[in-house]
Length: 338
Ligand code: LMR
Image (cartoon, rainbow, N blue to C red; front, side, top):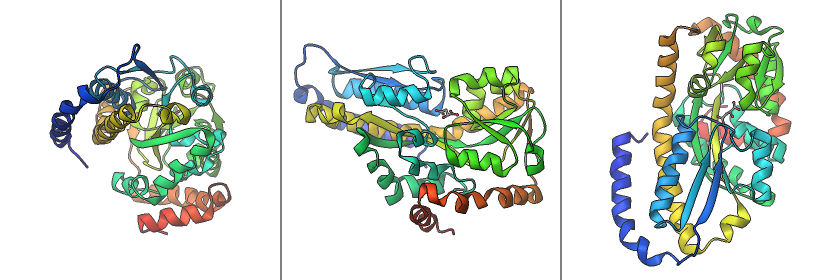
């Protein structure tokens, strides 16, 4: 994992190398090319900060030939609409959660939702940087979408207004999920009632009791103030939530190659940056929520964790038909598990 300091050094070297060529190679344009980058989370999250870094680098490396406009917090589009807007070309760039590609017909991304598939960020790298990760991004092309990168968020906590120590505690609870059939099966395996809902609606749904609980990495829970409307949370790390950065393929392929090259460079470096801060952002968000004292955070003991694993691991086999048994096997092989 790159530290912030290593990133700053690498970025510095890259900037020096690039700055000499930037001004000479950019085509002269009457108006800057605008990239609208829409997303649903707060600016002070791993994704929000990654988007800001991309904007800064893209505008600098193209010497202003490209302008990146960021629309955070579902300001422009909610979950489902943003995918449609990208395909229609109303926005050019998104970074949806990997759990949100099912409605697009690329449900294989739901691999990342399998409970207890990956135990930490090192495991995650084995998937995102390997053949499985590359193969998944390639599946987007027939949909008119190009996948540029994976951006990390983190491992999820479960929250509700009642304690969640064992699977029995979920019985009958209405739990908000993203639009993933794996997450639906996960909640059902716990005896809960899953409810798909756009991210922008979750806080209010928790506040008014439309749903009882949800799951998210601490950075999302904190920046949406969900801890103010959830009395209990379990640091279960039962699953992962992260992103694919995607662009409208026709837009991307239509760019002048010199400009596209600079944007690719900006994306490579923004990805290094985003993925170097995600773990720390989640740790500091968890610490901040604990300090705020509104939610009681619980750590599972070994016996309770074993009960969660026992209840949730069968989801892998149960949902193999949706994701593809071969893809799951490929992921196990990359992870060295079975
Ligand atoms: C969610 O809907 O819970 C997340 O996908 C939000 C996000 O983009 O991190």
